[in-house]
Structures are given as C-alpha cells and as structure tokens.
Image 1: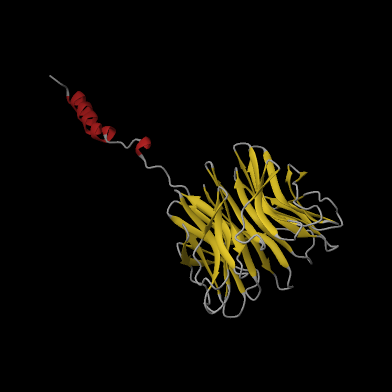
Image 2 (image 1 turned 90 degrees about the vertical axis):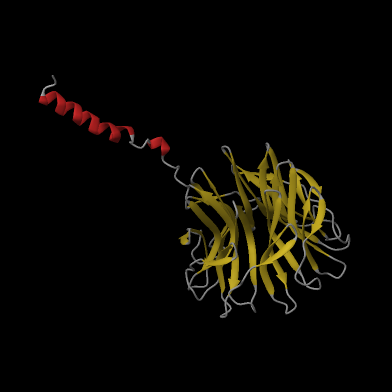
Length: 364
C-alpha cells in the first residue's frame, strides 16, 4: 500500500512531466534576422558654404574632421570591413592643396602624393585581407598620374601618352588580381576607357574612334568584367551603356536625341543594373537605372530639376539607388531611392547642397 506521502510525490512528478517534455528547445528558436545598415558617403555644405565630408548611417549624419575647416573636403567611396568604416576621398589643407586619403572610423589617414605642392585625390577604396587599396590620381607637371596606394605605398599605372592626363574611378581585388578602372587620354586628346589588370592597360572600344568615351564604374562577377559609362556618338551625344568582357552594350535612353550617362554598375542574379540619368525631351536630367538595358525612371523631388543616381546596390530583391535630387528651391538634396521610394538624408544646413556619391549596404 502506498503511503499518502509517496502518492503525493508521484502525483507531483507526473504533473511536472508535461511541462518538462513541452519545454521549448533554444535550438528551435528562429534565427535572428540581420539588421540592414545603409551607408551613404558624400558631403554636406554648411552655413559657411564649406563642403564637409562625411557619411550617413541609416539616415544619421556623421561628419568627418577635415584638414582645414575653411576648405572643401569630400567622401567619394565608402566601404565597411570587419565593422570598420572606411570613407575615402580628399581633404583640402589650409594652403588650398587637395590631399588624398581616407577616414577609418572617423580618423583621417593621409596618403603621400607624388608632389605635396599639387593636388591628389582618391576615387575608390577596397579592402582585401590585411591590405588596403586606394585608387586615384596624383598630379605632376605632365598632368594627372593614375595609380593606387597599397597600404600607403604609391603604385603608378601606365598612361597612353605621358604628356596627357588620365583618371581612375574604381579598384577591385578579385582572385588576387588588381583591377583598376579608368580613362586614358591618347596623343590626340581622345579619352579612351579601359582598365588596368595588374598594371597592364586594357582599352575598351569606342562608338566613334574620333570621339571620347568614359568609364565611370567597374564591377566583376565571376569571370565576367563589367564597365559602366558612356560613349560620344558622331553627333556628340552621350550614349549610355556598359562593356561586358570588352563588348559594348547600349542602354535605352529616354530620348535618343539627348544625352544620358551611366555612373554606377552592379550585377545580381545575372541581371545587370546601371544607374545614372537620362535627359528627357524638356532637357531635364531624370534619375534612374537600367535593368538589362531597360530604363527605370525614379521620381525626383521636382521633375523640372536635375537629379542623379551615382551609386546602385542590390540586396536580395531590393534596389537601392543613391544620389541627389534638386528641390523646387534649387537645393541639391542627398538621399537614396529604395525600390523607387525616395529617402531624404538630413543636411547640415537645409538651405545648402548635399550629395551622395557612394552607397554600401551592410547586414549585421
């Protein structure tokens, strides 16, 4: 016969079993979705009419300390690596010389120019492993010299004509190869688009051999090399498009009798996105992007004013297009379109211009 005390103990244990067996295993909890961080690099003009370099993180402005508070500075390229924020561009010193460099988590790191008495600039930054690459130009008597700094050391890139200027717009490290996209002026002062692979120049074809063409953006997807930009045709109209593995592919403009330009290119799921502007029949620069060559216009703040897309990023099914839109007061407003919806980024002074030149989306 079971005593009352033993029976009570058994009943208590049985009552607890359902709760023990139904207890939720922590491993069954859904994984926490990563947060999306939108970084937009550029500048914002203050009340003293000085361009202050900085970036917006999820809409919050982060000003960066310039070399001189009385001189213009700018962020041209931004990237995030191991939670560190790198914002590259230039800062003008008190002598009015443009100094190349980058800010790492807000601290300025200057890069040595070829001639400290002349202007130099950084247009693109990339991190690969423990190496930092900053591509740009450094000025000499013979004009701008193209090249890149690797961990602070300058690496010159060859020009088509030593007496002419050249430019650099992008640097990418892929499979241990260093790709630098840019433009080279030949002896006839015609701008030739192309890229340097490990220091060797690869020219891209022109629409008209007597007219200039320009590379404005560079992207590598697998074994394919994409370069976005525009070509001048025989009527001197800017024709938008991109080169894929050296073959020119035209993008449809709003009006073929007006100019259009591609400033940014990216590839996602074999779809090619090129951001920029296209001029309509009224002569207004309309912001937008081409998906596989088909135009997608974006709504500006004022459809009678100029707007631009300078940077385009795809994350999943979302399309982010960073740039600026001019309002009815002729003020350039920094911001980005997400799936066609405009997001204004707060300016230092709402009555002054602000610009976004580089957009990065990070998941944390």
